[in-house]
Length: 500
Ligand code: NAD
Image 1: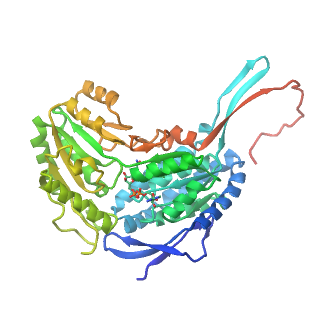
Image 2: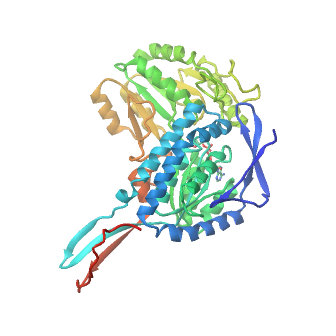
Image 3: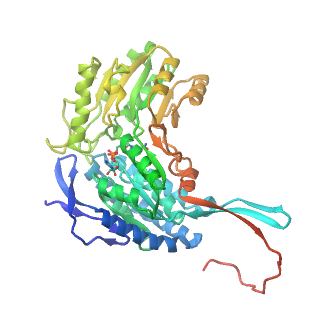
């Protein structure tokens, strides 16, 4: 089958031009090229931003009642069509079908949060701050906002930002990852079906050229970025230099500390689920397991036993736990880390470079789960974000040594502790220098009404995604002080007040 063309969505319409540059989209399970993606030029991005700006002027003044109706309709459509979107994610990203549905369900929760926009956009009000003077705050939209998303959650990460931005009255220009671009096109189409006016939701596909165009266009008022740390830092610095509000979420190296009093079966299940789920291509994946040495042998044995039962294969396959990596280049990079861990002296307990997978083809980008023990903090498998199915066990003597390692790490996205000691857990929660903390929970991803974001090199900017921090990011506060000297106005109208 020849590759299908994937192009930009400018408001409600597919772009009809001819791209000067394109890139290939693969099916990671077979290695086949399935799509040809149009890459936007700077001029095209500027054109789309200008259209979004026109739409933002109208959408930002549209009543909360009407905006809420669009959000409820979108929520319904997303729920109904999530199977179709999940299939597209499996075909371009490679993760398993249930995992793809899971990410859309987490995105759906942000839509549900945004459906309450009338409640969450309420400003504060003080009557009579001075004699006959009232003071209040109103939250207004920014205008055009830019979103730049990574490959690993092609639906959920866009849905962290877009529903809140649109609910708050902004127009969006989103640039999805060029590796798995189709899910966002399907989602944009649902916004159209939900009744969102033309130009409020726009998708430009592309690479650095499109990103730079968004970062430099003065009409784009904010950038929400998620991706690797070096690009997050670049986006933050360039965006803020150009006067924009920027939230740039970066990479991660998440640790799980297991104390001797923990339930080791629970901890082993959690380490395997959070280490190998989505082939380790999650920003909240557990990459390092810190085992206090009195229980380390037993814990490693339990993890080894469970890992041996996992099935790697094509994401739609029956009983498949883990799919391929996103590209051949990424699979080779992760393989390179396994080579390095071995030559640097870590104990290779399970070697993911060997073994069979189910379905797909021999040219698929597969790598099986890998488990290292006796990993030392100076090894590259410890220092670097691998973003693959590689779990490293570091043995520590104590809670304090484990906590110190976590706090010395330059990343601060997620962390978890497994223990039955409430005092230890409480001290951990207080002293750990990480943005999202789990206690006997493997992947502590906050709910939509809390906010998602890490600390240190995992976030540039100070505002996390969704929840009230998301609302704050996508609005400007205006403080109004009013005095009315003549209160006499009115007229009779016995009709029941309503929106239309
Ligand atoms: P990436 O940094 O390669 O790409 C992210 C986005 O930036 C893409 O849209 C890409 O097109 C664009 N981009 C890439 N290179 C660029 C450049 N030189 N200039 C401008 N833009 C560029 O990240 P990825 O490989 O797509 O995603 C994986 C990374 O994302 C991992 O590091 C992971 O930890 C991180 N991530 C973090 C979170 C979080 O919440 N902190 C969530 C998901 C993923």
